[in-house]
Image (cartoon, rainbow, N blue to C red; front, side, top):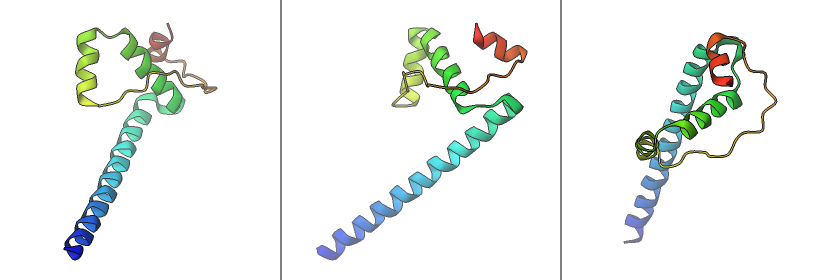
Length: 95
């Protein structure tokens, strides 16, 4: 019985480590894609700011759909000192 518990605990630990590794890989892929979009003006706080504003202005139905995909969404604004890129796309988001 004790051996089974130890085996289960090891499996749980291994699966948690695997999950964490996958989350990290997903975050890196997301980061690389965002860098491609923003090129030289990329700043993580800017991206988070855009996501927050998009979430705030989205319809209730859209917000509900996003919440179903991801269990939590950061609602507070980041304190950022980064400089926003001066591109057409960035100007759209700054308004």
